[in-house]
Length: 476
Image 1 (cartoon, rainbow, N blue to C red):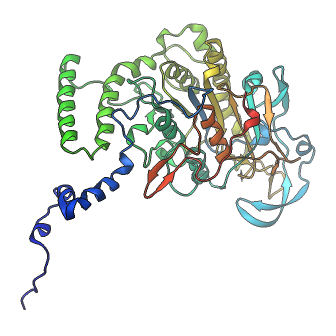
Image 2 (image 1 turned 90 degrees about the horizontal axis):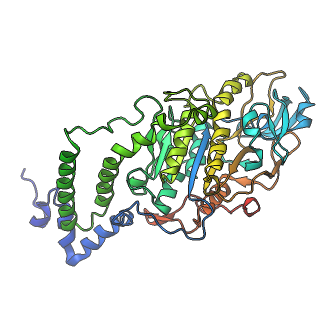
Image 3 (image 1 turned 135 degrees about the vertical axis):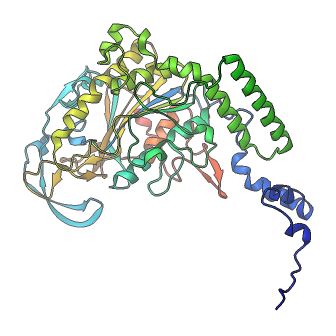
């Protein structure tokens, strides 16, 4: 039996996958070209230089961000939110309506904190003995004790804190800042992440998702070779320059022949940044020129290339060199602050970061950089002030309320904002949702969170979705 013939236009039938774009450009009186341009409109915001410095929407207090993320859920009632009544109520029972994200009535046993709280600085903000070095910097810190997030699982809440979405991968806050402001140093990425291991949610926490790829975070792994493949593979710098110039000319010709492919500009820019990084990145991470006093302040030994002190000192050096958003992650998705079994595991994790973070604030202030650098310290959620067994050594996940703090960059130092209830179970006053937190960080950088949008899949997206309000009372 013979196959029936179709009425398909021979020209259409002969179109190969490689020539589909050319076909669309000439099909049905130009409508195909319109459709193609619409499909590429998400990439069209990649300008001649997608990382060129941009003017903010409004006067900025901060030029850059150093974002300190503690993986696993730091206990708020044992760090920055003192609860005397909780300390006096060991093993007393209480009924709660939410446990590990499940609604109902649950009888729990209150658990007192292990560490005592003491006032720090002239302001007297109470910080626990878990962070004695950070406590000395209380006059620089705005401690938010009424943070709230949407999910009780690590993956979702880590994604939420970074991307403003708890269910789908979206551009991270660092990518949004890069997209909104560009970079001040063409030889370094605008967004860099220094982490020994990825946290929960992996590299989605620094991804650009639908934003142009130039805004994705560059991952630096502490160690003797923090950026693999950064060294040139050709004999001389001159030869490499000639090769890159030839590649640049070829890309420019391709761009002229295919003007709709504006995403190519991002790829061209990435080659240029990589070339510049071959000199600037190793120099930024070379601590040999730092004084012995500076290394000691961060708790570092000469020649050391790992540890949170190394991360913090490199962050200061990157900030000096114009990197817009620098994220430091202390540990990965295991061996972190997730103290289900024993709260004493917080002690070595705190020791790992405490001196280094205090040194970072001190160093930035001494160099006159703190006023223009917004330092953020946060985790994905807190830990329960109770457990379902008496005398249990650990704490569970707690998303209803937790603590974060900000310093520098237009924030009032030496204050606390918001409160939790008498046991640290729920927000009592001045709730700060993660969307509000993000809106405030962007505001301090001069970015209006409602105007910082990107059109994707037929709608405008933003970091704060359709929510978020700036916390005006913490602004200097």
